[in-house]
Length: 174
Image (cartoon, rainbow, N blue to C red):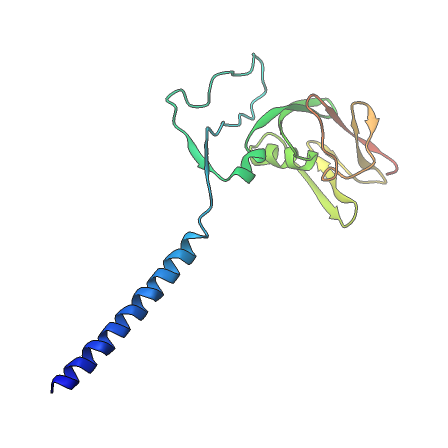
């Protein structure tokens, strides 16, 4: 009888060791997947036209911070504005570091400031087919100039600089 009790304790001890090893392995494995987040203040992007000096105060005077992934910072920090001119209409849209004209137009459209449609051509990029009140048709195509010089690529392939003026007009050839 004593021999059966000893065998039972040995088996129970082996099972306990296996369970503890199993738990330790998975806890360490899951901890290695933790992303390292950096606390940074997240500024609010205001799509309204700027008529006064830009706000130089911190985004949150109380000192509260949000945690964001370090790689997403380039899409969260506004740099300046670019001007979009469509016929007689001109608006300013915020430009964020590393964004193409397409990215700026899309953010403006999502904010309800501008409307546009277009088509993506592999190897060439996105081409706008209508913007504001301008629409392609009758052999006329939408063409854009950057600071008075006709662009040679789609809006998804052109990365503007702060202060650029993007002017849209109808032309007879691309």
